[in-house]
Image (cartoon, rainbow, N blue to C red; front, side, top):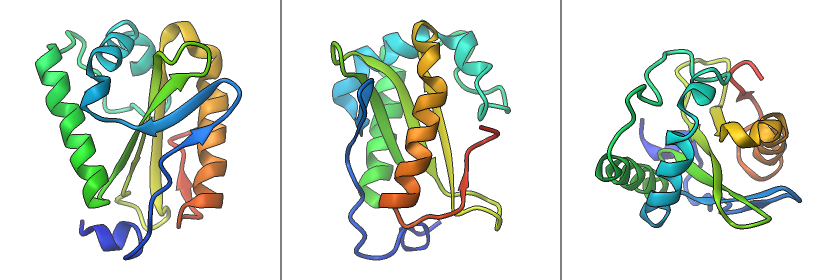
Length: 152
């Protein structure tokens, strides 16, 4: 899908969302080790999170740090092309990676964007607050009004 059909030409995507519990910033290669540790520690928790119905991610057997780095580079390239926007979720307490948010085009005419998110199993209490904060942010600061929250 061409980027200009996902966001309007000239749209400058917001690069941060800050709450008392967490902050979002674009996911990139610099997050590799912490991102890898976060999701590897929570595979079953993430797979049971609404929005991951296909059962393909995260891989049950995980992936190597190099494979994760390639995935983060792909997400950063999508962000640069405005074809998708992935954010790391960082703890306000210690700056550690505690989750991730994915904003990608939807195949359905019913929605403008699909928003998926996950948090580490040890931060499960932030799952709903994260999804709710992102949904509000998308409607207020992004060009979308119809957000597919994947069952949330």
